[in-house]
Length: 152
Image 1: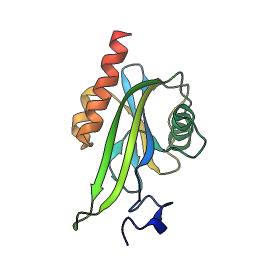
Image 2: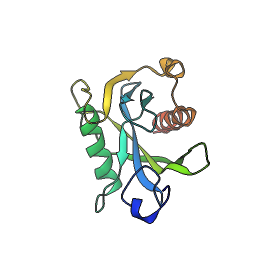
Image 3: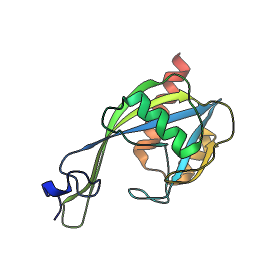
Image 4: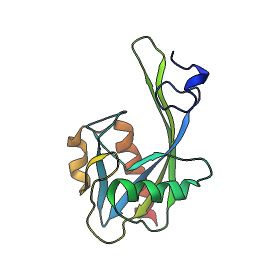
């Protein structure tokens, strides 16, 4: 049954929001994206990231997720914003609810290699992003991070 307390440890039909991290990773002016292999948003290009684990800081979660999904290390992180991803089924029950903490960082050396739940991982120039069919809020977050970089 959706939102039943016995599902407390599950991502599908959770009883409370799950804290996740998304990372806008830069190499020069290009941004790192992964193609999601699993729901939510399977098959779509997105930022590397995922759920924070108990006892893990947001910074540690960001570093772990980028490494797991792309094989890359990242430099110092900066907070960009927090957003909600709430997905409801046809009956209106909350299928997924993530509170996403979005950070930005520069990529370490080497090419990205997809791993974990990423079907692909690569850097894209900003002008290519609108044609990738990404979640519109992801595009807004990337633009926020770009503006932060330009001001720094």
